[in-house]
Image (tube, rainbow, N blue to C red):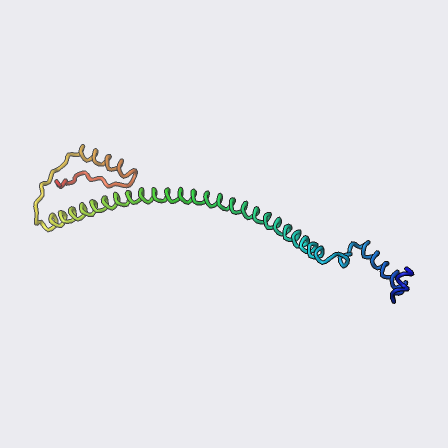
Length: 170
């Protein structure tokens, strides 16, 4: 130390104080100011690299979670599409079935309307006497058979029996 003090203007107390500071920094792990410039840059780059690697690992974990969620969503969508297809098929089948029934009922209604119009025309002709239709008188036994048949067809509906009626030949 004498060499330092004799040659320079540095005081021994200042040197001891500087050494104490260096020792304290060393214990804390912060001697970056003593490293050469390249090593400081490398240390900064290493810290950045660790940070980037950490962020990359987090990003990969997030992407894996998203991938799993997308797979689940795709499976749900496939099931939904399958169920929707089945429901559409059932709806189409029901549409066809009821369209056929509607056509059948429309045809029956048309036939019934034609018969009603024909019978109403005949009744008007009979009522006004414009056309003559042959009339048959039925026997009592025929009325009983017709009456029982009519009761069976109406399934218990009230029917009015006639002891004598006229049959109009159609």
